[in-house]
Length: 194
Length: 178
Image (cartoon, rainbow over all chains, first blue to last red; front, side):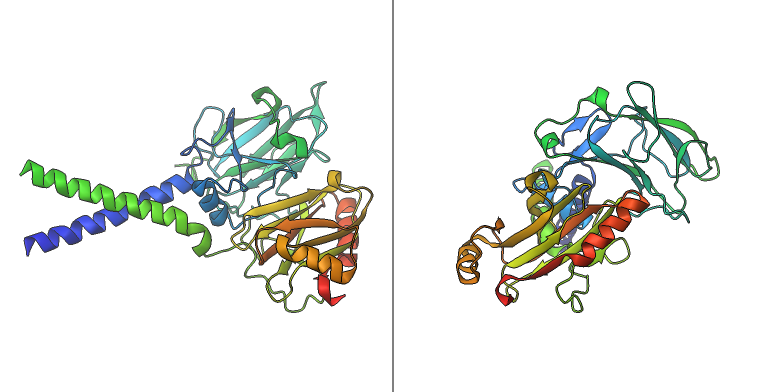
């Protein structure tokens, strides 16, 4: 009787541990050594040989970029290595790869877009303001409106930034760390931040 | 006692490992939101279906106009025809579980006129011969069923207008129906 109960408990514990570790591995893109550039991690939906990438692509519902389309970079942490929070404000600042069509999208970790009447979900290389000879961007993100390029995070429970660079050559030669912007924390709304 | 405890611990780890491997390998084919399987293709009549966060859970770029066309055993290879807008666009062939199998972007096409045949490698030659399509771009795939995802840049109002115009004229039909 005791052995049967122990067998059931061991089986349940094993299944729980297996599912929990699988969930964690799929949610954590650093688990299987995804390529990172500074604080940005590269998503590779076409990596057929990697079962974790395939599971991740399925979880995202598809829609990632193929190698001749460009590359997709995401970050869920700020420059000080803390998780991005929807209740906090951030400044995406620094250079963007030159001569490439890029789009920066603000969403939650499940890909849901913010709710705002202007339907402003991010910026692109064609509408973002740039500064200085290096054409650096300064895009604010948060719940309180800020001057300049701004994306409201209204309605989001978590925060993810997706930078898509549309160029077939980038799959072979990804941009370097100093060609990509950083996400600097600007402060948190104390009511919403945990 | 210690030996017995270690044995049970090892058994737990083995079951956890097997469950982990099974969950990872089965996830792509058993995903709840497989690519565009929830999109209604019944009233398309050769046009592509616009997809966004209202009718798909796919993680698409909102700065683009995204549209899909389905191909399966019933349609056979499909032919995408039309005129592409000047700004950035791309076409991706995806399997049903959302994995990208092949892509074509503006840089791969000379001019703006699109005439693309998409389907399983084995069937493409037969279709080309029977339909008399000798000089046509092809996208040769290892699957019979999947989706063509078209992305047209629509980052500004002008771009959106151009993308919508182009999308109206694009056709995605079974290659053998023409």
